[in-house]
Image (cartoon, rainbow, N blue to C red; front, side):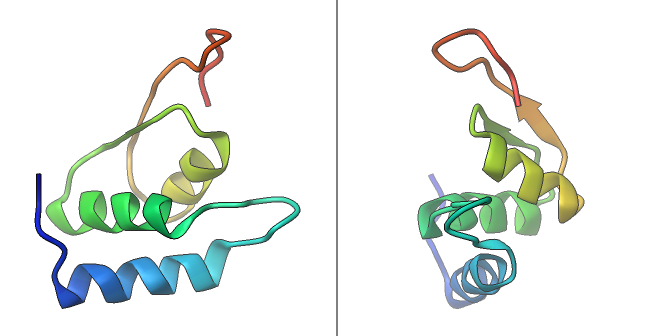
Length: 74
């Protein structure tokens, strides 16, 4: 668990503003907060969410692709 500081929150907001699209890439603020945290800590992001994985890769964050309920990985 990591506390959300101002730097992390601002980065999450920037990621959301840059990448959110309701129709094609519906990443939530919580998704962006997870990505911002991973990015600032230099860690990989574990997710089964395809839009979040796409944004993470676009931002240069390595993704640990987890299987979804049907076994598909992003």
